[in-house]
Amino acid sequence: MYAITIPEPGGPEALVWAEVPDPVVGEGEVLVDVVSSAVNRADVLQRQGFYNPPPGASPYPGLECAGRVSAVGPRVSGWSVGDEVCALLAGGGYAEKVAVPMGQLLPVPEGVDLVTAAALPEVTATVWSNVFMVAHLRPGETLLVHGGSSGIGTMAIQLAKAVGARVAVTAGGPEKLARCAELGADILIDYREQDFVQELRRATDGAGADVILDIVGAKYLDRNVKALAVNGRLAIIGLQGGVKGELNLNALLRKRAAITATSLRGRPLDEKAAIVAAVREHVWPLIAGGVVRPIVDRSLPMPDAAEAHRVLESSAHIGKVLLRSPAA
Image 1 (tube, rainbow, N blue to C red):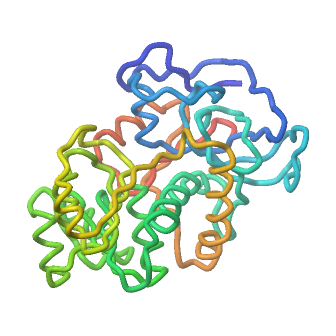
Image 2 (image 1 turned 90 degrees about the vertical axis):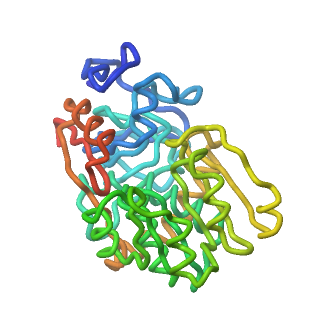
Image 3 (image 1 turned 180 degrees about the vertical axis):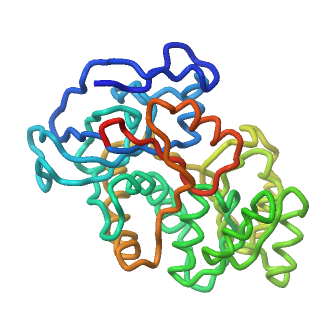
């Protein structure tokens, strides 16, 4: 098969479409012929040499895909050759074939085409696990989403609105904020021009956010704590703004607040399977019913992954950037 390889870490040009050995299907796994994959920030970090795949995972980038089951390994149940699926991966999505643990497979939701389905596994699993399974967002509460126009952000807005929460977002510029508003965001904050702590307090009569979903990390740590409501929960899922920050524990104590930090890629298989099962139970019906939809900025041929990375790094996109397999 062919896959996007990284012979040496570097810029987007480090991504090379090359012939590589086919994956071997192990016990409890299925082989998927990839139709499409999606680009995530973790792929950029892997390309730069900062985020290696976990032991035993595919060396190729790509944390999600959509395609068709072409082989089934021993001790697999519930899946058959020919099934159209999308999948959460530890790696290997930028390839023509990938082996996937059966617990990380999802059927393509009703009303979503096979190429577009690759935009769903990572964002739905990330948002549902962090905002709902960990931070327990409830109807009537306020969620603040940093990077509201990103793939994660566009999904978080829709899922929070679907359960009856109020949504605040930060994004860069009026165009991105307008798209967030179209998806249901109630409070729009341009992080380039406005202080999100002040704007959030103004919009919530001083209460703040009950849950904050943060992709920035250290740069926002102090301000995120200030923006939290009493009994608020800060869920950190990214480090775009650095890894080390100063935390005012007294402020955290006074608010009886909590901070969690999670990632999906390195979790044990049983934890990933539990998250995927929860997504299938709670999110898939919302997609099938048209309440929630994948937001795709553009789709590029998989051999042009370098250009897709340039788009992601420029932050010019809204929603997900997809990669189509040449065989699609």
